[in-house]
Amino acid sequence: MITRLDNPLAVTKFMSEIGFVSSARPGDIIELGITATAFGRTSITLRCEVRNVITRKSILTIDKIVFVNLGPDGLPAPAPRTARPPAWPAERAGYHGRMTMPAPSAAVPVIRLKSDRAPGHPWVWSAQVHKPEERLPPGSVVEVQDARGRFVGRGFWNGHARIALRLLAHDPAEAIDADWIAARIARAVRLRRELLRLDRDSDAWRVVHSEGDGLSGLVVDRYADVLVVEYFAAGMWRFREAIHAALLEHFPGARLYWFAESHVQKQESFDCRAAAPPAPVAVHEHGLAFHAAPGAGHKTGFFADQRDNRRRFAGLARGRRVLDLCCNAGGFAVHAMAAGAREATGVDMDAGILEIARANAAANGLAVDFRQADIFDWLRDAVARGERYDAVVLDPAKLTRDRNRVLDALKKYFAMNRLALDVIPPGGLLLTCSCTGLVGEADFLEMLRRVALNAGREIQLLEVRGAGPDHPVRADVPEGRYLKAVFCRVD
Image (cartoon, rainbow, N blue to C red):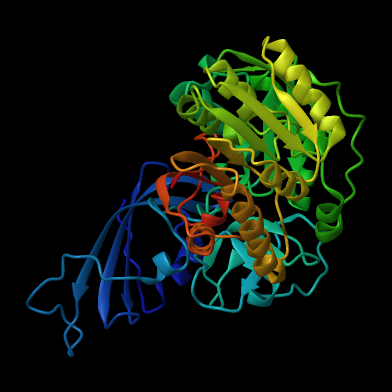
C-alpha cells in the first residue's frame, strides 16, 4: 500500500500525526511527502515500512529519504538534489542512526527544553529546561522534547538535582523500563566477558561504568562472588530491584552489596539504607592475591581501575627501589615486588587500609614496608634523611568534587609532586596519578610542567594512561575519563 501525504509541516511534526494511516498493516510500505522550509523549500519523501500497528497507529521505520529541491514555482528544480542537507530537523532533535516513529507514550510525562537544539551531552542542567507543571518524584522516567516540541529522547528527571535530566535513550521506540535496564546490563557484561575477556586476568573488574555503558548514575564492581552496586542517581535507585535481578542473571549466586554516598543521596533526594558491608573478599589480579573490602570507605572496595597500570609500573620497576605514596591496599608495591623490584615502601594515612595492604603482601609471600603517615610529612623527613627511590608512585584519593575548588586541588597536586621529585634520583621513574574528574588532563600535565620548572628538573612523559577498558568512556561524555596516570622519567 502506498500512501502519500503532502503536508507543509516540519518533519518531526507530521511524525506525530500518522494516526490517520489507520488501514496500514505490518509489512506495508508508506510514503510520506512534505514540503519543508528548514533549509530552503525542499520536497522530502520518506519511504517507510510499517513495523507494528498499535491502537490504530502505525509504527514505521524510515527506509529511504529522498530530497528534491523546489524552484520558485513550487516544481522540482532541474538539478535533483541527491545528497542529504546538513542538520535537518530530525537530526537536530536528537536522532542517531536509524530513525523510528515514537511508540505511544501517553503515560510518560514530557519535559521541554528551553532550546530548539538537542543537547550534545546526556546531562542536562536545571537551567536548560522548563520545569513541569506538575511536580514529579525524583528519578521519574520522562520524555524530552525540544523547544519546538520535537522528540529528543527519554531519561530520568530530577527537579531537586543540578543534573535535572539524564538522557538515556534517543530511539523513540525505546521505553525505559526493567527490560531496557536488563538489556543494557547484558550488553555491559558481554563487553567485559566476550570482547575484553577479563575473566582470564582477574575476578575483580567493573561490570557497569555509568555513562560509559549508557546507564547514567549506576556503577557496579565485581569482586569474586560479591557485586558492589553504587547508586549516583535517584532514577537508577528506583530501578534497583530490576538492576539486582538482571545482575544475578549473569552472576548467579553472587552476593549483592549496594550503597550511595550521603552527599549523593542529599543531592538526588533519595534514601539508600544499605545493609552491613560484607567481610573482605579474596580476589585475584594477574596471578596475585588481594583482599577487597567493600564498604570500607575507599570507592567500592578495590581500585580495579588501576589494574593495567599496576602491571605496567611493575614491569618498569624491576631491580628498583619502589616508593608507593597514598598506597591504599598496596597494589602497586605488591605488583612491583612480585615483578622483581629490589624493595618497596608504602605510605598511607589510613591505619585500617594498611592492615589490608600488609595482608595482601603476606598473601603473596612478599615483604613490603608499609608506614602510616601523612605523605607531606613523610617526604620531608625522607628528604632530610637523604633517601632516594628510583621508582615512585603517587596516587592520591580524589581531591575535590567542587568545581570552585579545582585550583586548590591543582595546588595540592603541585605540592606533592614537587616533594616527590626530591626523593627521585636522575633517571628515576615517576608514576603520578589523579582520579579527580574535574581536573582535566591538560591542566594536570601543565601542573607537571610547572613542577619540573620549579625543581629545575627535566620530566620526560613516557605514557599518559587512564583506567582499564572495563571503564569505557563515551565520546560525548569526556568526564568519564576521570583517571590520569602519567608515566615519567625524571632527570
